[in-house]
Length: 441
Image (tube, rainbow, N blue to C red):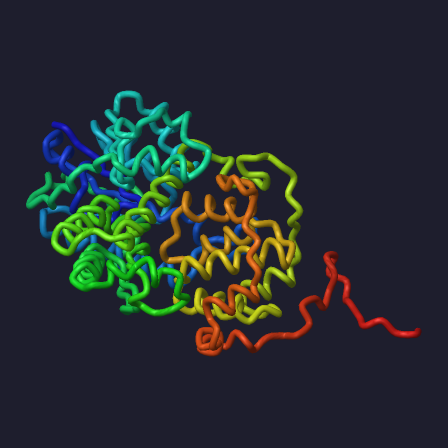
């Protein structure tokens, strides 16, 4: 009797899931597991409070949707309230698991957990697939240690590589084993949630994918992608892509069909261009590991940023002297989403106008963004800060010019009340001593 374990992470879907196809062919019984990672619910070293309500809701919707999908093919999704290390050790010690299936995740913590499991359970056959990326390592025209130091070089090498055709969903999976899995560890019961603009899960992801490519919007993408607001101004696929309820290969396949039926254009290429950016940061995180989180990033150079509690709080709340930044941050806090242009603007402000260590901004985005992806988030913050993949050594945006170009009539700023702020940026100094106006006394 062969018992398999599928360890889900940022891949909450049934379609284009080679790990499920492998399990169907190789084992008699199957456990489907997701681990909630309690550290995501606790305050961090960067003054953040754990996963935001928007992120938690979107994740729960995705888990609920996957559980419903698995139920149709004879399976159940077990959601552990403990971290992956603890959960996997308990299951592997209590259940005779012979095969463990996992998609490669670029995050340092995820890679270290997998290495520990490999070392502790040498008799378990661990199958690693690549369902989070467009390409597998064997398709890349270089070894991972030779990952190009800039995106431009990476793009030129891979843009003509054919990605694998997405796999269909399975109609049946091996049943769960007779062991009472619920007795091994604490499990989270399914939570009822409310729908929002972004609803997590594979069903909502496929609806958005179909809706977007049934319009003429792909042929307008490049001209509209820098807009600060508006549902139709970008694909809006990134939350589902980050959750893994939609794969990069599925988006590329839909894009190929659209170009076949409607013709390719600079705009349709730009959708692929953005997928390649995400691909680059996926392998960037894999290649550089914990360097993704160091203050000097890949460069190791001394950065000027520090931590000013009051300034960071005002930035995160949208209460700075920069109205366009305030509007973007209020939009993020309310919706869990921000445009790509907005992200660059607020990151530049935090680093260069406010003088704060870029990692605090990256951590705040990790807390808030429903499309949070470890490689794309921390890699892009390094890029703006000049400690990562940008050969120019950082990107400092002129906020007045950005406002004039992307919000000339102040419509976005006024919609999100960006013009409402405390005119005094600092009321205390870096050591939390009060700052008073100078006087003759």
